[in-house]
Length: 257
Ligand code: PGA
Image 1 (cartoon, rainbow, N blue to C red):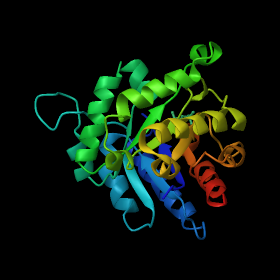
Image 2 (image 1 turned 90 degrees about the vertical axis):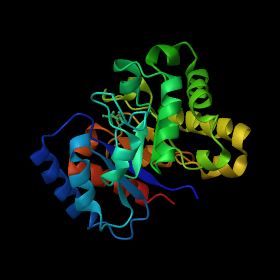
Image 3 (image 1 turned 90 degrees about the horizontal axis):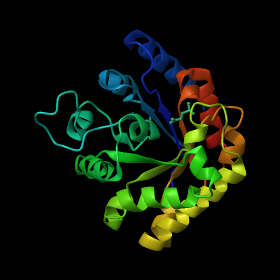
């Protein structure tokens, strides 16, 4: 079933005590939302995963994600963290292929495909990010870029494994810029992503895939973006660092029919 999902990507923000205060605030705000059907996922920095997971473990439909994981199981990879390790501290999801990983850390399709496989092998559900740069959009390559990112990284998966993937469309030009995609732009590419998935895995899988929007999504534009037929929620960066803003965004998806 296609799920409505709001995920918080805290990126490299907050000290431990600030993170604990934020999670307490989010918990208290969440308890005030009645009949929430959406899934909420929080992706804190690695060192806080266990503490955040412990704090959230009794709340229904709230989960923890890592912002990344490595492709290898274990061994001499100084500074890296495996999918197994992430799972063992209470995370159920992992963000893979965020544009900041692609850009600053030069992560390419072959590595991302390995990461996705490592995540699935360890029962971590991947939130796989795709999206074009401004230059790619302006030269009319948006669809091709996103298609390639999906084909190269996901299309060697079995249908069963693919059904565990959440896709996040995050145009690079919208991330952290205050310049979100319009609902028309988001709907057009989300619908195209669904077509690409349908071609490979069929309409049932395609209809059941949750496709999130990310990039300057705030409580001001969430209702409009989530109003799009093929937008199933959001991956929220900046606005997720404030409990009130984040829960306002959650309310917008909860109200979506
Ligand atoms: P933003 O980030 O909401 O701050 O634009 C989104 C993301 O990078 O996941």
